[in-house]
Length: 236
Image (cartoon, rainbow, N blue to C red; front, top):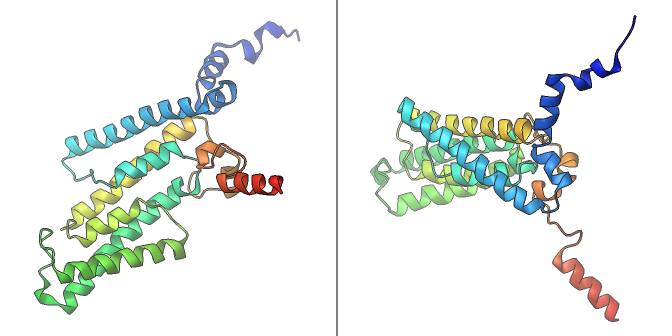
């Protein structure tokens, strides 16, 4: 059987199209271009704007409450440091879910003990509201540490619930649904378009450490304090 090497898979149109688009992925560009920070800035702008735009359009078309302030800082972490442990789907979804549950539980607990608290009205700020906020903010930190799902923006979800803004199940499901939609956007941009090994669920710390800037690790090999210590010992 005669085989023509010029007709191999590397010469096919599909191979050339895939090869062309693979060179546009963030992972490839970071290895070939000399200014990785500039590329990350462009990626954060495009991915963040598109992801929040999609959620906004979904909220408009479905008339569902999908827009909440915590989505902003979560989107920043997902696209600025996508390879960090805090940006993994597990941490983002689980932390926001637990945060809402903690806020609602704190609201219910204080409201049950003090029926006169009038906590159903978010505009009311009194001693009982202070108790709810303090309790929920303390519990959410402990909960994320115990569950090992740290994601700082989720604390804002707790505050929203503790303030009484999640007045019905539709808003609760809307917040969680918006978080899931944001993670799906992150998976598409980071893994498919970016070419990064963005985790499907749980992040691998060993993989994260190898991505430096994209994992939130400073560019320099040593920190400022390590450099200062080295200079002190050099002078001695």
